[in-house]
Structure formats: C-alpha cells, structure tokens
Amino acid sequence: MSKELSRNERIKEASGYLRGTLAEGLTDVVTGAISEDDQQLVKFHGMYLQDDRDLRAERTKKKLEKAYSFMIRLRIPGGVCTPSQWLQIDRIAQDYANGTLRLTTRQTFQFHGVIKSNLKATMKAIDTALLDTLAACGDVNRNVLASTNPDQSRAHRTAYELAKSISDHLLPQTPAYREIWLDGEKIAGGEEDVTEPVYGRTYLPRKFKTVVTVPPSNEVDIFAQDLGFIAILDKNGEVEGWNVTVGGGMGMTHGEEDTYPRTADVMGFCQPEDALAVAEAVVTVQRDWGDRTSRKHARLKYTIEDRGLAAFRAEVERRIGKPLGDPRPFSFDSNGDRYGWVEGEDGRYHLTLFIENGRVRDIPDGPALMTGLRRIAEVHDGEFRLTANQNVIIANVRPENRAAVDALVAEHGLTSHATALRRNAMACVALPTCGLALAESERYLPSLVTALEERLNLRGLEDDEITIRMTGCPNGCARPYIAEIGLVGKGPGRYNLYLGGAFDGSRLSKLYAADLQHDEIVAALDPLFAAYAHQREPSERFSDFLIRSGIVAATTNGRDFHANTGPIARAAE
Image (tube, rainbow, N blue to C red; front, side):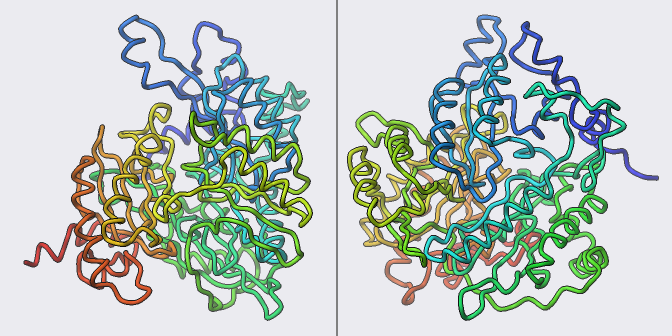
C-alpha cells in the first residue's frame, strides 16, 4: 500500500500552478497574513510570511495580531547585478522594507519587513529593475550560484553563463507570478493551457540548489548542494568540461538520526554542450524518484542514499542519451573569499569588501555600508557581484577609476580590519524574523567571535584562517556542518558545537558538545586552540589537526554524521 502524499504535495496539486488564493488574500485588509496554504505557495514566488518575534509577547498581551511582514528574496543568477540595479534595490529597501539589505549565502538580496499592503508595489519596483523573485524559494531549482574568481575572468564568465542558462532553463513557466504581482493578463484558456515541461503540476518534492564553481576556490560550497558543476580548465585557462556533483545538502532535525547533512558525490564528467541537458536530467530524476510522502526525507541526498549513486547516474545517462565520462582531477584550497583588490586577466580590477553576516546598513559610529555602497553605485561603470559568503565585489573597475573607488571606501569606512576568524564567519538571519529559529545567530555571532578572538590572540593564532558558522536552527542555511567550527541553535542561548569540517568545504563536521551556552562554548574551544598552537604540523588546518589528534572523529558522509560523536580523545582517557 502506497504512503499518503504530504500536505504540501496536496497544496501544490490543487494550487492551479502556484496561484492558490494569493490574489484574493492580498485584498484582505483584516489581517496582515495570508492563509496557511498560501503561505506555502508564496515561497515559490520568492517570499516567506514572517513576524517580529521580539514583539510577540507584547502584542499577545494586548490581544493584537502578530506583527506580520514578508521576507522577499531576489533571483540573481551568479549574484551579478548592475550599478543601476543596486541603486534601485537600495531604494526599494528604503521605501518598502526595513531600510537594510541582507546579502545571502545564495548570492542574492533579501528584503525584510515588507508589509502585505506594500507587496505588489515592491514586486513592481523589482520588475522595473529588470529583476524578479520567481523560484527564489519553494520546491524548485532556486537561485543558481557561480564562482566569482575575479582573477580568472574568462573562466568566471563561462561559469556565470552556465549558471544563468541553468536558472533560466529551469525557471517555472506558470503565468501566476505575473498575474498576481504585476497585474498580468490571465491566459485565455485558464489552467488547462499552462504547461510546466520540467516540473509538472506538483514541481519538485523539495527545494533544489545548484552551483557552478572554478577551482581552486570552493566559495560556493559545492559539496553542500544538490547539483554542482566543477570547471575543468585546459592549459590556457579555458573551460573544457565540467565534473558533475550530486546529492549534497545541509538540513536535518535535532534528535532524528535518520535526517542528516550530506556532502555531494562527484558523479561524472560532461562536455560543455551537454551541461544544460545534464542539469535538467538530474532535476527530472529527482522529480520522479524523490520522496513526496515525507518532507524530511525529500531532498536529493536521500534519493541517492536510497537508490545508490550508480543507479542515479545510469538514469541520468539514459535521459541525456549518452554516458558521462569519468571525473577529472581537481582540487580546492578554501571556501572563503579573497579580500582586497585583484587584477583580472583582462586588466580590470575587482575589490572584495567584507560585509559582516551580509547585513548592509549604516552602523552608528561604524561603517556606513548602505551609504557607501550607494555612493559607489552612483559612479561605478562595472558591476557588483555578491558572494556565497555574504560579501560583495566591486567588479570590473577600470584602472583609472580605482582611486575614486578607494576614496569612497575610505570615506565611508568600508575597509575591513576584521581578524582572520571574523572574515571566515557566517551566520543566518534567525531571530527576530525567522519563524524556524530556536536561538540567535546574526545578532549573536559577532560577540562570540569577539570572545574567541581574545583566546586566539593569547595563543598567537590571530592570523590563522579558521571557518566558523552559526545557524539558529538545524536547517543549516549558513552551511554550518561543513565549517571547521559550527554552532547550531538548540534553544534560547544554547547551541550544539560541531568540529572537524574541512577548510575547503569537502568534509562534514562532527558533534563535539551539545547544549552549550556562551561561556561553555568559549571554554570548550580555548584548550583546543592551545593544543593547535603548540602541536600542529606545518600548514595544518585547525579541523585537520583535531582529527589527526583524535579529538574528534572524521565524518565520512551523511549516514556517518551521527556516529562517534563527542570528544573522543577525552572519552578514551
């Protein structure tokens, strides 16, 4: 007897290709919210209904509705936008959102605090900027990431072009987006005339994330993604083909060991002309094979664990009509960004700026990030590139314009003097807006980093690059399970501490200690910093040292994630 489909599957099937009752819900002035079913559908349109959790208790006491608003996420393949678009996005944040911009781990912008009555005006302003939010969330292929690699201009251009092609090709075809948000005309024949050649009526079983990268940088964290393409370069630096990775993903649920993060497998190699067909085939196999009865088991990582990589590859090859080649050799050196100026192969310059946790705002007595980047956009004739580490690149600056950019950077305090640890830190938004957050993240990580910096300084490690990432819940939006130090919220002020993820993002971490508060986190890490300072081998990374020294066990992959947890060296004493 077959299992019953999940509630979300039934909502999608009955939605009329993502229409639901969204149009009617927008006109309901009695509430700032929308119906429960529409809350699921609106994700496909690039937004989440949220509320200000800082105000919940007060509003409940006063018998008021929650302070509802919407988070809106843009679709920007490869994270590339023009100065004109930057200025328009800045204006939207001032006019309709909370006056800040959030750069995300998926190379795009998020607006927070948009109330329901401003949704259509916001969406029309986004459309005027020649941008959209379709498929930025939901059970579809989401924003496609591309390696920025500013010193490899030709390879970056090829990676970006593939990312954009995949994003466009896998974009939902439903006219619901334009009908609802942009007052587009409905199709004369109605729902019957809508076709979704890739997705069908119920789209994918779960969200799907795709990236394109150019070694040696793994800034897009390819092993944490459902689908990835690794550029294989010839001796002239041109892309001669792509290694294809499948089956990565971060999300899990506390206390449920049948849910786990997983690093992607390298499935094979394809020629440039076959990459788009491979992408579609991987998506459609997951469409047909993925679990639609349990959303906790619906990601591609579980499909591959259940079916096996060989069977999955064989089905992809059947659908593209040719075999994949054997994977080609490649290597990564880090999953971080390269800060400061870099000269590209074409003589243009690129300046990577550190944006702590991706929050663009003017900080009192600190950097005027919002104003400074606006001023740069007003004079810049190149482009902006958002990175998967929540930072921004002022890209394609002509040599004669460098001085003007430097002057604006200095005037507004945009030059970061952050330590190595802070430059490699990343947090999700969490409280007060994310409904899933169990603990703080963006608002807490900076102060934790300050405390850890003091301990690192005492050990002479202030210049050592160590990745640290934090999320307010186990869904893993900031990819904590492949950081050298990962912190995942368990409850207010309490976190699970994970250690041992590879510096280049290729290995999962292991649970070291659970339910730690601030002082306990610092106390747990300080002796490990001391041991690392005195016992490491030349060029050895922090996480590699912890594994070599037997302090934590190495995680081989997903099913092994929950095994051999805790400080194994201490347990053996």
